[in-house]
Length: 311
Image (cartoon, rainbow, N blue to C red; front, side, top):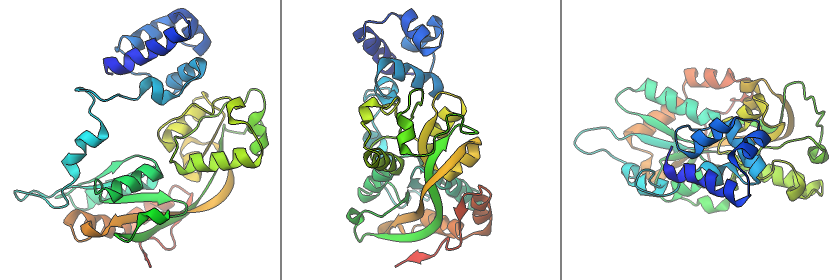
């Protein structure tokens, strides 16, 4: 962990007037753990990061997201490594596919195993960020769920991946009896949220507005985690009670799930990259039986139209 990340925790703690011991007791960890994190010797897990952020009244990203610097270059700074759509010197360039849904990671893995002379790499990020990187030519494809923004433009091809449900992720057996949006405002209910630009964040905010809730009064609303898997893990490990996420996350972590709506997952491919070797492998994999069976195994997706081109 970089010194910049470590010092952020100390800076925020000091600004709140808390000693290491006071922060540790409030967050349910040891003082030694806080000291180790601040000194850069330990990288906190999602549960500890959430607990520290909650006590300090800030987000996980503010405390632990790397800042620009020599040891932790920004995503934009390293993006030049994968802007070329075709290889040089006879080597096959990898394809980069961005998105937050777990089917994205499965697709990348199956594609790499399918054709070992090339690679397909998954870059986890929100819907908005994935489409922006695609628009800027920094990734070759994106998996997004929900309605397709008009800003996507004409320079892409779209393919069906699957349909699934998105809704409330709840602790196993739903001990707090959360049934509707109004219930998340009850005392003792702890949220974990996704960043702006995530489909899950958009749905969370819709539910909060419809229930006439004040997000500032919702415990954990400002506690953000970067990925859907992180949200599910936080609930499974007891550091939060409720989040918005895909049905597949509930299956993976054995959580309770209350569906809010059905969403379409779409593979969006840059038209300029459609004939590159790696992207052809990606599309062949999307239509392959092994990948289809793996997605079906999550017991959360309808794969009836998987691989079909969308007009």
